[in-house]
Length: 199
Image (cartoon, rainbow, N blue to C red):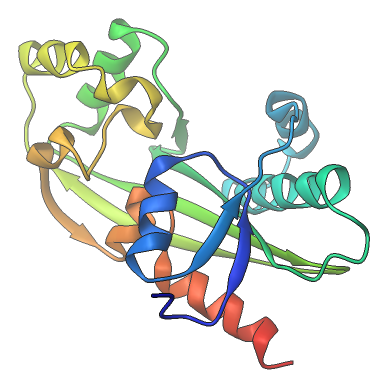
């Protein structure tokens, strides 16, 4: 049963985002276009982190709209992008074990921010918003980070951990949206969809 009266396109292949939409009963179809994320980031790198993130999410949604759908499409296209930030550094996905160790040791026994930007495009209209949440880690040991890397979980996760997986054992406290930390803030998602539905 679809609890919410929405049918949307999700511009992401992330299984975590798909699970979150299913959790609250939103009907969706996955569409992901080819785009050069690194090249786009270079064009907005002069902007503050939060604005870069929102522009990237919007770029993803607009790319799907322009390359995969007819111009008169009125089905909402939802895109998201998540980063982990500490000491003004953005932590992406670790490329190898050494990078994973560096990232998680930087987060050890400290509080960091997990920011997820949302973009919603319907026809010629578009809106973005940001979910900014804090996560506090317990003290980590290098040997447990090495064991964690061997599980395969950190390899495709911003900041090198998954709060919805084994990485939850590192987390001492969160402030904000759990779903936003996972990668799709549901409160903000519903608000965005509602803002279009009420027009």
